Image 1: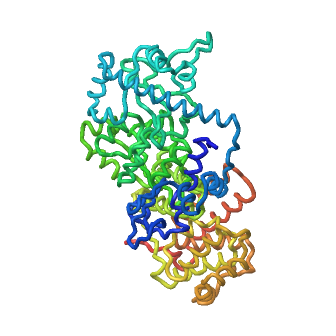
Image 2: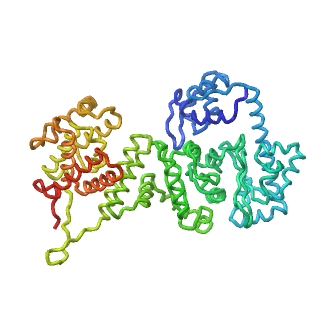
Length: 606
């Protein structure tokens, strides 16, 4: 039975060879691939290498994909191996129907038609009629071997492709099926899609031609045209240059996403063979999945203008829910008015390498994007910025990674907003301006009093863990050490998965997960009696107000930010909960600023 190619491609994508081979062979990381001792012949020195989509033994020559390995290692037939792997991948094996067989024949016929068209276009480029296209490509800095390597061509006058391929037995209906002819809806006549354009063959990840893109020379519109969706071509799933980029990445190159065909080709000619591009549209989920199948951390390279910034923001918005510890991205920004093609021609490969070396991690890029739209000058802007950062981190599906992003983003937020906030001036009764006193937060490990306040905060959360989600970002800013730091991390981890945030469950979990000693030390080693708000018998509102009160002694600036944020939330959605939270925060801030403690955790700097 002949199975549809798209089914087999999806199966291979879902079941990478390493996941199958690793069950029978002990694999070790070797650069960007895995290696081990070949299971098909006895050897003591590993010569069996496993790549992202195939394996190869340099000792005995065994070669194949996950399906081949399953067949060879278990003595199965092709369909048996496919059915076994499909069950693991959650795929349904297509039933053998006449319709499916006919569709597969048409697909193969379509690929043959596209290959014949590519030969036609490539031949036209070398004829006198293609001279204008050839001059254009050479003027853009492409070498002859690059033009041949990418199979570039020229589509001349309409009708020439149909006439030539008809002599080879290819009918107009087949050209229409391949996306090379279009039908006029008004009169039902067909016409060739590409004419008077430089032609770029579009290949799938295996190197088979599935469509074309054409660039017009001169002032016509649209500048670029891509072939339509066909049985062999899906624009959402295809990346230009991916077939050659996979080889380059396997040999140590970096996977880079640029904007257009010429950017890919110019970058590859300059030594950046891992360049790919979407087909004239923004990145899609399917294209991101394709990128991650090739490399764990591709670089998205955008223009340094407003359009490039918007494209980067769209890509970030798309990628956030898909990020994991094993699948991430970097964001690179080109100089204004430059693209990879122009940059390497004007300044050479090193200039593009410098752009890639300066690529930002997703957390840094995300912070910059959100800050650009929200601002960080006024209290209201800072509160909005913080709220959006927390919201963005929460869109990451991987909860552990989302927590780390939240912590990193808020650390940078508090560091940046503290540094940027101007020192306010005040006036004496006679009107002479006097510099406002500067307050410095004492580190928790520098005094018994501040250490005790930190302990009280932790005890409140042990007795009233329902507060954890509400105080998470504030609690994370404190520079805790020893048992307090370990308990904080353990509480955060527990709160991510616990169904109910109750004291009995929290203490039981910590006791049974290796934190018994830290727990006993924090609960019993206080230098002073616990305040009423830290007792298990405290009312929820009392515990909440007390937590923020003691936190304010340790980080009053963050407390002010919490008040501003709570006010915005209450203004947007005035409920009993938002009003209660705002009231508790304001009360805590008032008590701290009025000095309602020995020294409120603050010292005036000289």
